[in-house]
Each structure stands twice: as structure tokens, then as C-alpha cells.
Amino acid sequence: MRREELLSLRLHEAVAHKIQRSPELIEEVRVRLERLSALGQLHPHYQAAWRRWLTLELNAQLEALKSAEQEWIAMRQASPFAGLLTPDERMEVLRSFRGEWAAQCGA
Image 1 (cartoon, one colour):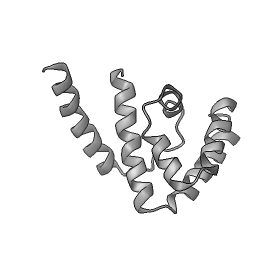
Image 2 (tube, one colour):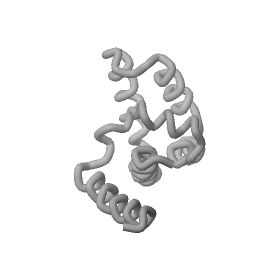
Image 3 (spheres, one colour):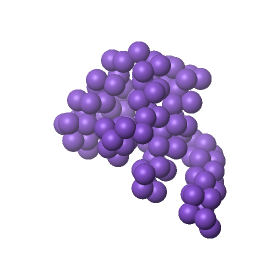
Image 4 (cartoon, one colour):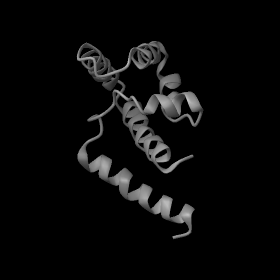
């Protein structure tokens, strides 16, 4: 997996963990998706795919966010989750990722 794909995966794993703790956040994601769609900021293919994701039961949603399958790697590039993590949560993921990536690269 490329660096940016792995970072996106780690961020979405954090999102999945947060949603697991607070499932009511799914409604916030639904609102974000509709806003992005209305503003034309999300390609119709991804709009439809994320809407399908919203119809899944919670465990399936969480597993999809953490999936290493090519479909979900692509989906994470057009994610409606921006802003769901707090700045501190995001920084913690980034700090952890830096260490993980350095270890993978032998740095």
C-alpha cells in the first residue's frame, strides 16, 4: 500500500473507532454527505457508493472503513468524514503513523 493510502486507512480506522463508541455520528456523516453532494464537491459515483455505505448495518460500515480492499482504498480518497476527528485525534493518528511508516521503511 502506498504511503498516502496507508495514512488514509489509519485515519479511517480512527473514524471507525470513534463511530463505534458514538454511533450517532453516522447521522453527522449523512448530513456531510448530502452537503458535499449538493455543493457538487463529490463525484456522483462516490455519492452513490457512500449512500450505499450508509444503508449497511453498523458493523459492516466499520469493517468497510478499515478494509484494505482496492474498492475501499479508492472510496477513502473521496471521504465524507473530514472534520469528524478532532484536531487532537487527527494529530495522534499522524504521530503514530509517522513512527509506523519510519519502521516500515527502515528509517
